[in-house]
Image (cartoon, rainbow, N blue to C red; front, side):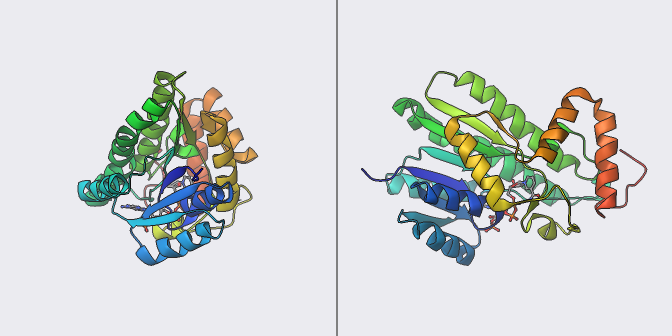
Length: 266
Ligand SMILES: NC(=O)c1ccc[n+]([C@@H]2O[C@H](COP(=O)([O-])OP(=O)(O)OC[C@H]3O[C@@H](n4cnc5c(N)ncnc54)[C@H](OP(=O)(O)O)[C@@H]3O)[C@@H](O)[C@H]2O)c1
């Protein structure tokens, strides 16, 4: 029997690369998607070292053309993924009124339109087979207001809400939906967004986040929050008024040098 296939977006670095590697370790063949061809090829070699197939596909998933490239290539190769991991993303921070509207629109295209469209593309075959698993990578920020990261936090809240609703809709179908909500994770995420990356006692390695994410995905768990600090944050969000949690997040980020220019406003 050939190994079943998983598609992982944003697999050229960070959490996505670690998820691809963890799936390979568990004998899944993996399609790795991102824009950086050299990094994708390197991560594909690491996955293939687990004696599984690894197929790198370069595509900008914030564009309709990029989504089409991925869907067409999988159709051409006759690949119907059993697992879809919507992980590709990037950060933005700073006062909203001074923010780059093009970058904000791209974030929505990548994290929301891309996730919805890929899910829509691969779900029918999963339902037909009565078997499939979808993992959306959101954030603990899905649960709270975040000063200077309004669009990012709202995207993550959308991902959480979409995952919860779809999981309910698909209950009993053989297809499960999971949402992974990491907190601070050691990747290039913050440096790429021009944010300071001070050490934090709560930070996790991408490999640890991926191991917990893949385990939860294969168990069909809806909500996966890696690390006790992140679980405490999510538990607080369930019982504290959002302004209190938002105030704490603002204080915490200011201590980490991520407050930006809009101090004094939550
Ligand atoms: N690191 C954290 O502290 C943290 C915390 C909570 C949630 N998250 C979430 O975790 C996910 C992964 O982030 P990360 O920390 O692993 O960051 P990362 O190391 O910067 O990885 C981001 C990945 O997304 C891909 N990507 C970005 N734009 C893309 C596009 N237009 N089309 C296709 N791929 C694109 C990148 O690939 P290319 O550059 O090759 O395109 C890269 O593989 C994100 O959704 C992020 O919001 C991260």
